[in-house]
Image (cartoon, rainbow, N blue to C red):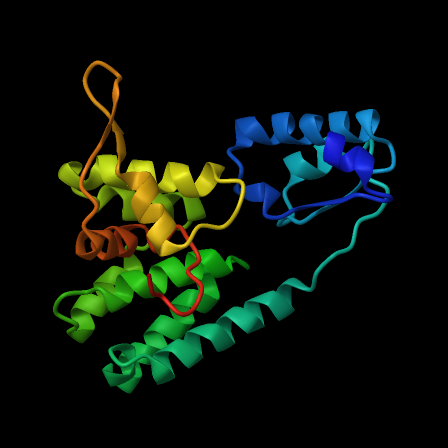
Length: 227
């Protein structure tokens, strides 16, 4: 609140409100309402796909709504998918008929979700034996929701790696600034033993790159990827 008070006209940008769990959406909106009541000069811009529940929650205090052309967003996703199929070293080798099937599937199911499309393209790219029938099977069994896509990625993480993944995501989620790979490595060596006492684990950078590969579906990595 102090930072908002200091600014002449503070702005908060909240993206992808629809990606909150349904039971958390009302809590999030009430929290934002509380901010505007405490600091009335605050301006809030929220972005979300159209959902009746969200529109109902916002109806009493939203001053203006701007609708984004859904057809335009879906067209952008189509372009994104076609570009990936044409330029990715692995995907570009797929037969034309398989590429066409993938394009049609994404056009039908993406529903304006770029993140969903990114995760599903990664799933297709990771098919071990990329025969057309295997690619088709992977396409047909894709989760329809973003949460389903995230669950599918999380379920591929082996139990022995889960502690490292959890620690890395927690540091990235709650850090008050962007972290470099080197800083993430240093943070992740801080561990708790069975008595909840802090100790320092190993700091092998080769292992860190394996960890980054496991969590890359959940983070954005700037260039260059160095230490």
